Length: 416
Image 1 (cartoon, rainbow, N blue to C red):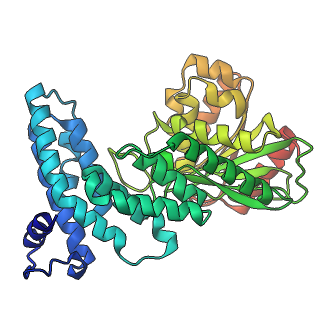
Image 2: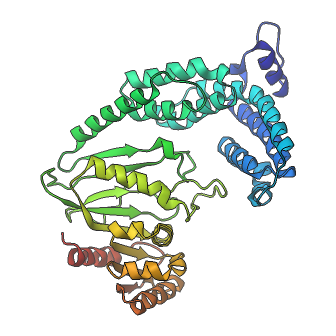
Image 3: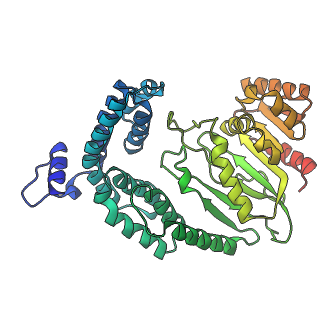
């Protein structure tokens, strides 16, 4: 280990006096830069040899550690192509990966040890998991101590994430039993929070990060109506925000008697810009999230479910309709598409037939987006879909007129 740390310090340009090898003296930015440089060397090597799948994973890792990294950003196009490596190159990659891991694992472990706020645990836990991934022997003891502490402190989601992710790199005794126990404890805590007007968070660390730049992991905030009771059915309202989205629901359905949730956008490894998600895989993230919501709240109405999407959220709705094999519209039958919807052009004839049992409210401003929305509404009407249109005077935003119209539409279509 001392030889590895000595080599690392030399790479960082630090003098390593005998017996005084201490990464704690290295600035955090310098640690991150050295990790990024080591990974970029390997990613560029992958790009030159057609190992593009491996290179893409490395590129995502680099941009997490060092978001503005120019070498990683320059690899976007070369690594997006389909590779065709030979078996000898794969073996050479594994050898280089092992060599790189010996260097970056201690750096990641030192990053994890740096002082940080509890709200930053998700990001710093990734440093620990990366150390474990690159060289398990370096991080195994710290990893075990960390997940046991999280479990002892009743931090169920953190403990579950560490066990589920870390178990891929080191054996964990009775892993399934531990995960089941953590799930049961989390469910008990959620049920205690399921009171009228209450709220709770469902966390999905196994689904990875959102598009947010703080590396926030996938989760959803659930807000219950003021008169909530487990003894009756409740309609569901889902909000999909603009830009990078939010895991908190907006207040458009407040007071209408809905359980409200916000869904964030999962990160797309091929495009790490904040507003970008992969439209083809979005449902594969939301399906397990919404299935867990149904298990937690089994009294949700099976089809009285409204989905509101603004801008990028409207794009998300049209992607879910297009790329879920009509699974999405079987349950989520009331859609509000506001100032967006770029994937409606991909709706198949089968999708349009299924939408005939749904209702859609299209809304847009009186500028370019409004013209697009008008065209989308016209197409829906021609396909015999129950579709309504609101064109308002205003900018790219959710105005009071939009909120009032949407609330009135919800009352007419669903109740509340």
